[in-house]
Image (cartoon, rainbow, N blue to C red; front, side):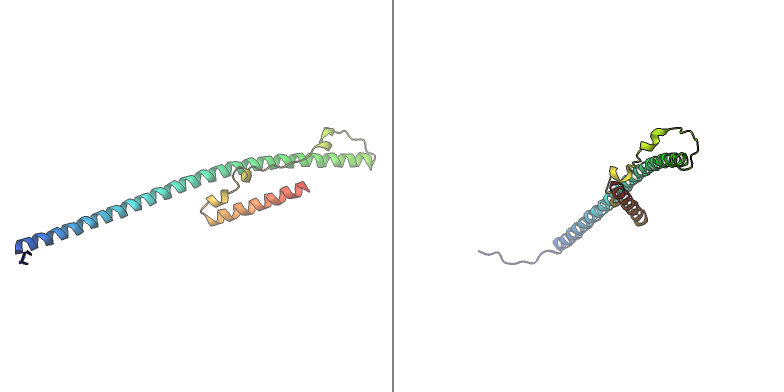
Length: 152
């Protein structure tokens, strides 16, 4: 037999309304807590990415300095070879009597082996600054062109 529908007492209605408000408040607190946690996580990820980019930039600067030193050494050797050629020209064509300081330079080959891009070929992809990324890509293209010219 069905129980007849009866009217809910006023005290129970108030209790149910308070329970609903409490439940909604709890849900809002959980949602706000989740949003705060996501914001903190995003901030931590951005901080880690920035630190990683700083490390990449420091390594790139060290590699570029090493490249610069190697390039300057090659320029010095090239200057010495050029001077030797000039002396040999003067001896051969003008018949001048000159002394050759280092005759082995005539056999010396100049080889420039840049390490900046070889260490990390995708270094530009790890940089957020568009201008720096563009300059790294330009430098990389120049190095590739230089290496291809050396191989020909």
